[in-house]
Image 1 (tube, one colour):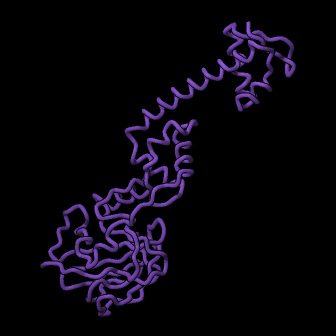
Image 2 (cartoon, one colour):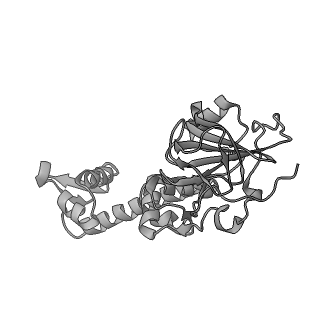
Image 3 (spheres, rainbow, N blue to C red):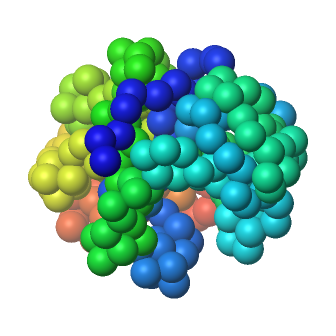
Amino acid sequence: MEIPKFNYPFNNNFPITLGFGIIPTDEEIKKKFLEWGWSGHVGIDFGCPENTEILSVDSGDIIQSGSNGEYGESITIQHSWGTSFYAHLFECISKVGDKVDAKQPIGKSGSSGSAFGAHLHFAIKPIDVDLNNGYQGYIDPSQYFISPESTTQIPEIKPAEPQVIEKVVEKIVEKPVEVIKEIIKEVSVEKIVEKEVIKEVIKEVPANINKLLIKANEVRKQNRENNLNRILQLASDYSITNDQIRDLLHISQSTASEYLSELEAQGKLKSTGKAKATEYQKT
């Protein structure tokens, strides 16, 4: 039997957080999928806040309502064309045996069962169900919504702010940030949240990561050579100390000591005095 177009299971406009057939990257969720025998996500997850009023997508009879294992609180409705399923609810309003109309409230969204935060898991099965399709007989419901332009797509993603991108770059490779900022300046993220930004960056530029690391190392090496040359140039005019090098190059005392020790080992500097009184001159 052909499945007709039907309403969304809510009145608001909520984003899809996990589409039908998607294999998630989160290891905990992937593990659950394997346990359940899913080839991919068997429904659509909508990012509904807790206590959002959930509506029947079409008229039908309530054939399941209440606690339902990993699905938490859930409701199943029998329609003329098949069944619709609403899971991880906070509360079930309708009970088994109730007849419901399209857009009638049946429950409230939540995070019951094996849920990683508040959302609505929505799924459908046709009457001529294929239980061997890898999705327990469920099919993609997105093509049947009446208004696909408003909710079936993830909302437009905003570009990350420059300071957020810089923070992400520092997570992937140590400074200098400028090395890779240009390459990922177009990276877009759904939420300006550090964890999500990092995920998006890694997803969009995996082929560039090794190249970026190599380039960053080259820049660090060049910066180091420049610093050593500046120290030698300064030491050719007069004696210098660790503190002077630290202030000149804006580096830590330990890094300044490392530079001076390296130049001394190469025979390019000679030292006089001890401890903080140590001075260095070009040989």
